Image (cartoon, rainbow, N blue to C red; front, side):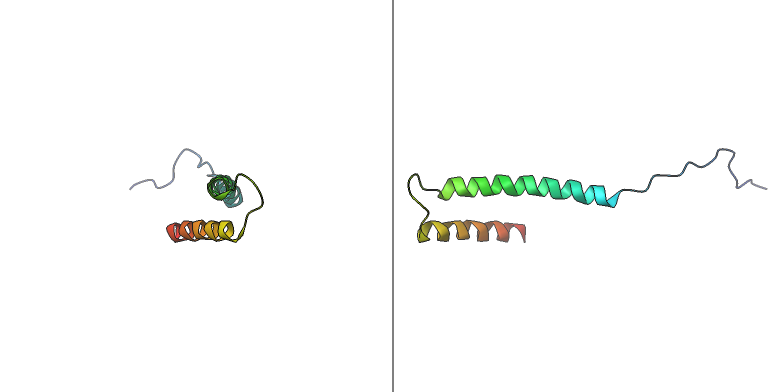
Length: 71
């Protein structure tokens, strides 16, 4: 006959903190988004004056390309 009970008490395993994991991923995503936004602004930014229609179109194209990469 085999003994199925163990002599050592089982230690409860801590449950994974889902909220903390989501928070950490969102912080990482936010940092990536800030870096990407800075890169796009640097790419399409003018040296003088306010952004015009062409600049806005160029930025929209960059954002669309980034969205295509993600999907």
